[in-house]
Amino acid sequence: MSLLSEFMQKEQQLKQLQAEMDRLQNDDRLKAELAFKEKLEALMREFNKSSADVISLLDPQGNKPAAKASAATGSGRRKRKLKIYKNPNTGEVVETRGGNQKTLKAWKDEHGSDKVESWLVRVEE
Image (cartoon, rainbow, N blue to C red):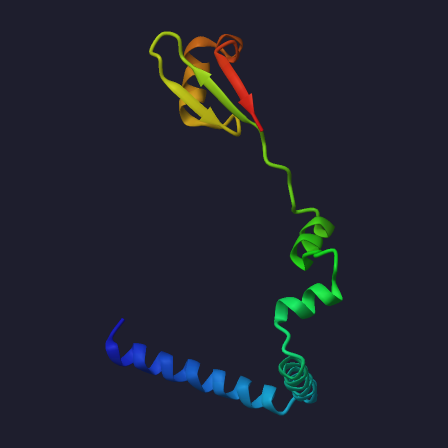
């Protein structure tokens, strides 16, 4: 990409961002949120409180919103157990959380799945 085309592309992006900024600045919801934030910060200064103080006051159990969101969406999967295999022929060690590990697959192709599973040394959480 030439320097001139890159400049023109960045200039176009700047114009788009400026248009978005103008739209947001005229949004009444943003104005209300900014007013709320200013009033809240003024109260925090008046009572000498930090953000953490306010959060602990409003949520004494310390529940994290991100933790709730991930649990609610179901994407918070439990980690797989770490399996450690040791090849008795070569002494090579493989640590994996899944069965798709390259060396482990090669061992299973060469020696058979049952044989390689007998090389399992330990399983960790």
